[in-house]
Length: 289
Image (cartoon, rainbow, N blue to C red; front, side):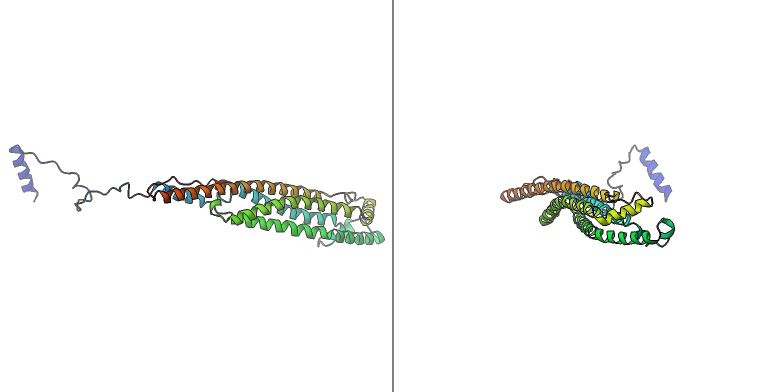
């Protein structure tokens, strides 16, 4: 089969004939189809504002909404509430004296303290009375810090969407909660320190301090302990965080109102123009607050 084709090619070359050039269009892999290649027209592509909105939705689907400035402040406030809770419990354990240490299984109260007889019995009774006097402080402190920590965590979880997709009631609720929390935490810290100082100024604490100091335990005194000071410190830090969160939430609500007004204005212009003109996409600047 190859010999006749070669002879024909040689005959054409002797007669001066040239082979016509091949058309590259028919040598393509799609040579079986007679239609030209399809290129999408500009009208077939989605509008630019739709593409921008898709990119914006893809960007907003990440954790950037929770990790905004407002979300970070709430996350830190959850941590400080947990620290307040831990310090309240630690302060109660440290100041309970032998009544708390005696509950430990590996602690022998008779061998670790130089107290015997009547003094040992008096110390146990005074420790028990002192712990009961401080009990309202630990109960209120645990309930207070736990409540604020859980509510703050709920607002963090609820803020996983952009601000323009969140309910305005939720933003107003977060604003009210943080504003009230900033004030209430300052008042709570003042009441807690007043309660601790009042308990430490009682005769029970004074007699207890004398018994411990007589046996060389000077650290068990009627001053404000380090645990109580830590409670006050982290409580004030939490109040500052709630105040900062209040300011950021106010800024977010204002930005959201501007965004909604601009959206309504553009929708009205679009209805007036019959929807022929495509406006630029709206940018929700409130998502970064």
